[in-house]
Length: 145
Image (cartoon, rainbow, N blue to C red; front, side, top):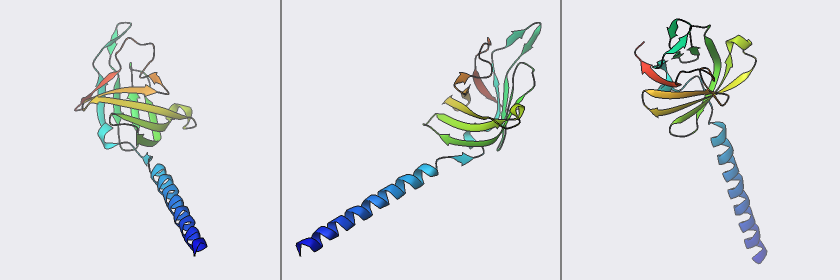
């Protein structure tokens, strides 16, 4: 009788541990999503103007369902596609994307922090974006277009 109870307890414990491991694995795998989050979609621009020679330009960002386009200082835009994302915390999103200029070969990590509904900070592979050495603030504001 004692052996049966011991086998029963061992079986229940083993089943419990297998069930817990299956739950952890499935919830972790579901953390990455395709495309871009709804909260980030739209048109964004920096309010600070950068002096480049005699030109004054602003940095812009257009975030669509499957594409992100950064256009800064009037140069050729950075286009990111093949996007996967997950929400790191309440105000921080982490995106993994491939850039058109690199023929979509290298995977970049884009971190977006949103301190408010209509504001965001953008970091590309840990560096401030759009341009690390620029005089612009990197705080983007949502625009109507």
